Length: 248
Image (cartoon, rainbow, N blue to C red):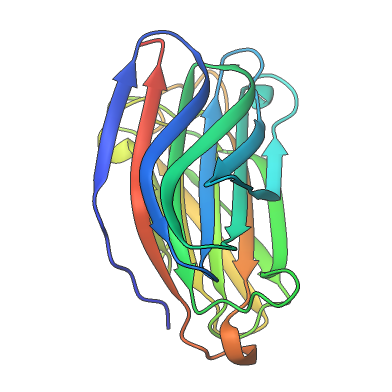
């Protein structure tokens, strides 16, 4: 089963939009897998990630989804990953396709992952519009998994308000939830260990105050292969859980 060691978190604000975000001092060993979960919100036209780098190595895009329509197009989610070729302590640099006014980023390190070929078993994505504000939920299945695979889940949503919460459903473990601190955070990152061939990942939206429109969500998930063909006891270590809010 997956285990978690929380190595700390930080929250940072800045004035104005940015085109990249840097996390300093991320340490990983040869064969580790680094993954970055990214939720982006930018009124009128959300940007996406153009690239992620660490110690001269480039991450691959595991799954990215930008919403469609309005306000759906304001939100994007992505999960990027890197199989570390040479251990080091270096900065993780996330670059965007344009200026971003708000983003939430979690960097994690995975161990016990089968890195022969691609470390990814399967992926899923879904854009949803909550059917019945102020409360509702959304979920999706990640198929083709094997017991002990680790499924990372990343959501960017338009739900907001002082009493609003978007929480990972039972059986999931949250890595980061901006709604715990911010009323306009809109990003939630979580994971779930696979028990079989299908993993359901979902979220509950409570007390969304903007009843004039249904909150939209861009949801992506990536299943990483457990070593040993399953049951290998892969683990996930949150290195840095950081909410970056710009233009405040």
